[in-house]
Image 1 (tube, protein in one colour):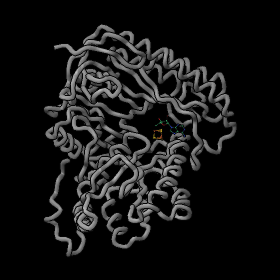
Image 2 (cartoon, helix red, strand yellow):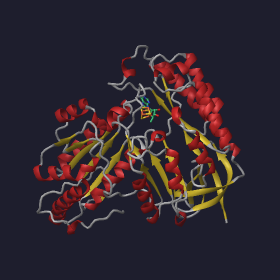
Image 3 (cartoon, rainbow, N blue to C red):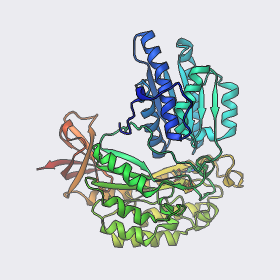
Image 4 (spheres, rainbow, N blue to C red):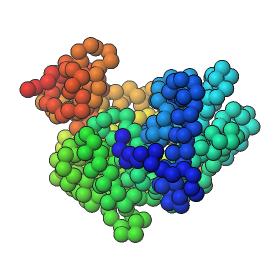
Length: 482
Ligand code: 5AD
Ligand code: SF4
C-alpha cells in the first residue's frame, strides 16, 4: 500500500474539506470510526469481499476500492459471506449483466442470516439507467450504488449509508475530474496496472463503453511518471499502461503530448524493467509508437491489436475506420520493424449482417497475421448502441458454428508460433507458484506467453532466464538457466 495517510490524525469534527482527495480521506476517517466501534462490539475484524467482473480497467479500479476498504479497517477475504460485499460490474456483453443478477440472489440469502451485512454495486453496469431502476425496484437490500465516474467518492457514499442505513445511489453522467492520490492495494507486489487515460470517444457501433465510461480524459504525464516511480520504489518491475485507446493519449491535455513521448518518459524510470500497454486502436497506431517500441529495452514484445472483424464491409458498419487491407499493412509494418513481436487480438463473431464471406475474411486475416493469441467474443446486443437496431442479426446456430471454426484457426496459428520459440532462452518474470504442479512456478515472457518451470516461491517477482524446452499449445515447459 502507498499514499498512506494516518486517518487518526484527521479531525473528523470539522466541516468536510472541499478538495476532493482531502474530502475522501476525511470520510475514510469517519468510516474508520464506525468500523472500529463495530469491531470492538463483535470482537472480531469486519470482513469485506470485492468481486471484479470485466476488463483490466475494472481490476485496477477494484485495487483502489480495496485500498480504501483496508484503510478504514476491513479485512479483505475471497468469500462472499463477508460483512461487506462489493461487485465491480461490467456490461460489455449481456452475459456479464446476467451474472450479477444471479449473484445478487445469493447475496440476499446471506444478508438474511447477517442483517448487518452491506452490499454495494459499482462499475459500468451501474451507468445504465434501466439497471439502476431494476435494482432500486427489485433488489432493495442493496446498500450503495455508484458508477464509473465517481468511484473516488466510495468512502463518502459508504459513510452516508453507515450513518443513515438508507440505500445510497449516486451515478454521474460524465466527468472531467481525475482524482489522484487515494489509497491503492495492489493484487501483485511486482506488477501493476496504471491508468493513463479514462473513457473512449470512438463509438464503435457494437460497443457500450463510450456510454458508460464517458469521454476521453488523459492523466497528466507527470502524475503518471510519479505514480510509476512510487510503484517501482515499492517493488514493482512491470507496468501495464491502461486506456481504451492509448493512441489518443494526451491529445486533450492543456499541454498536449503523444503516446510515443509518454512511452519515452516512462522508459527513463530507473528500476522499471517492463512496460506493457493496452489497448491501441489500429486506426491510429502511429509510426512513432512503433519506432519507440523498436528502440526500447523495456517495452514488451507484444502488441494487442483488436481486429474485431476481417471484413472491410463489416468494419465499416462497426465504425472502426480501417479496412482489412490497411490492418494487414499495419501488421506488416510492425513485424518488419520488430520481427520477434507477438501480435494478439480481439475478434467479434456474428456482428449483424455478417455473411459467410465476411467471416471467411476474418479467418483469412487470422491466417495471414498468425496471431499469438486472441480473445474471441460472440456478438452481444447492447441496448442504446447503433448495432442493436441493425437488421439481419445472425442466427445463433450459425454464430456458434463460426465461433468454433474461429477458435480452431486461432489454435493452429498460435501453436505454430509457440513451436518457433522452443530451444530459446528467454527472460521471464516469475508471477506465481504453479497451482497444478508442486515445486513449479509460472512466469511470462516479454511477448506475454506463459511458461511453467521448476522453482520456488522466492523467485516470485524476479526476472530470470528460462530455456523453453517444450511447447504445449499456448504455453511452454522450461528450465531455469543460471
Ligand atoms: N459484443 C461482443 N463483444 C464485444 N466487445 C465489445 N463490445 C462487444 C459486444 N457488444 C469486445 C470487443 C472489445 C472487447 C473488449 O470486447 O472485441 O475489443
Ligand atoms: Fe469500445 Fe471501440 Fe472504444 Fe474499444 S475503441 S472501448 S471497442 S468503442
